[in-house]
Image (cartoon, rainbow, N blue to C red; front, side, top):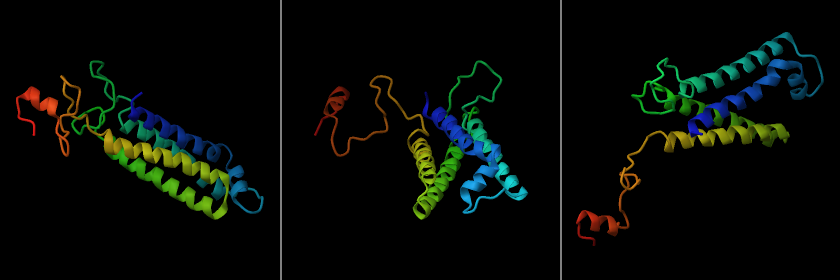
Length: 179
């Protein structure tokens, strides 16, 4: 499975998992978060469900904009995610990965701050989950955002240099003098 697919679908599943209790039972969320047990107000129910639906929409948009679901109707195109700016299948993949990485980082930071302040276990679980998806998104942005220039003969990346060590065998084959 491609790392883009893993991130897109995993991030959407994580956000949906967080959204489900907010949509299904806002009263339970209010009871868990408030010091006294009480019924949720109409405004709290509205905000809870709005946030839940927003999290689901953010997850679906990250799936669509990273190219995990091909938006083209032509069957002759290759399926797969690419972050190449000229690729019509996913022109917004890299910006979407970057923005959702910041989103998960903000959630992880907030969860960690609340966990250290309150000591509630659920905040630590949220920190771990969001931190994991932050790391995966940053890995995608940094290392998987270009196809590289892989040599067909050797299978090595052509952009690598010989500093500080020389590749003596490659220099022998090219007819260069190895120093």
